[in-house]
Image (cartoon, rainbow, N blue to C red; front, top):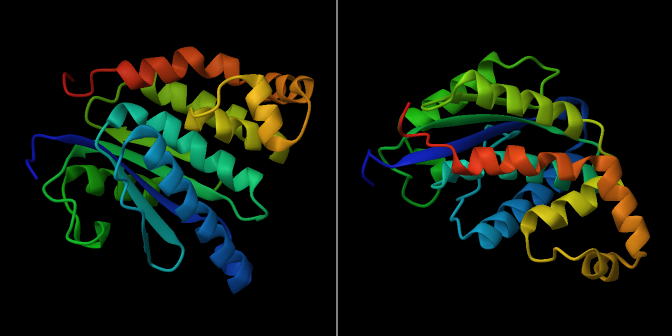
Length: 213
């Protein structure tokens, strides 16, 4: 792959995984793996979900503008899933030299280095961090506020958020039918989760010119 292609690499690790039993950790990774599959299908991305170092994982986005969508989606899926284990997510934007042979275990390039280094520097109480090419203080501020809002989602709110971020179902009536609840319940959950306030932030991150900085 050409090293002129900018990517966003999301590197994560499970929070307090060593205090959790093996079954809970495996269940959490099942949720993450399925989330990666659904997100990739929804946005036409081969995210190449890769697990490493026991409690670590990684995906790549060849459209870096989707980085906020992806981070929120993974957080929402874990909150909605039947697991008590959360994840930290470090997003690194940069060029890549190779996306690896079968998965990301032998991938390399600045985007991977930045993502991994930022994860190592993250505080244990943080959920999302962002660094790399084309990232300014404005993008970091968006991530900080997004993390603060997402931290307050309930499981039922997160379930609806995940469906919305997939983009397949957008009408409240359709989401209500899928979940077996009323349209009013869906509207209440979305309002409580503050998703409408993400619209401008998601658009700003999707359309930002990461290559020009």
